Image (tube, rainbow, N blue to C red; front, side, top):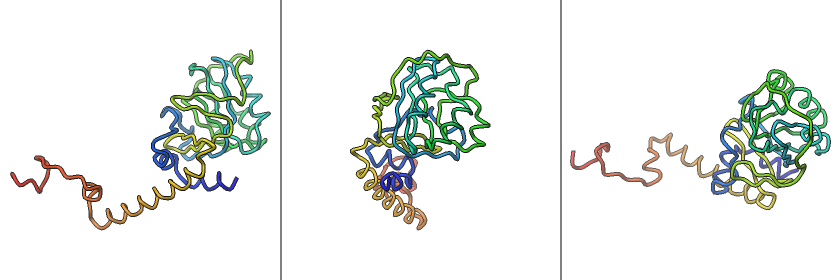
Length: 212
């Protein structure tokens, strides 16, 4: 839990860059309110198109602090999650939801402060057949997500940190933030990013072009 708390200090973008651009989920998955943030171990779900019974089971079975992560088998046009499930999950101590699909009841979810990251909003209801998997690895975008991997999300998007890379992510994120603060210092002193990074261009746009 201490490591998770430490990870929560960093932005999703910082962690993603620190891990050599690994772990980013599709950019379409965003918080339904830009202020929402999320950080916690994944409880993974794969549900069949337009079916949400496994999501009800997921928040009932997951542990407090877990982030429910849902693969909807590529079908996005349904509201897989709503305000009642959010209330149930929040009451159980679930840290939030990341779903590669749509949700509904956004106003009520925002009002209760339950973090939800989704592809968007959809009023279309779901079925209740219950096919799929719980707490087994899923793939969203190009990322394999195993139960217990750490999920970090904010306004920019969502990143997945494998369990065996948590300490590495923290160490490299600290180093990256230190480096970026040094760059900010130089920018405030008047240097350009071209000068800081050592990029030189002999072209017509440069004020220093000797041919002009």
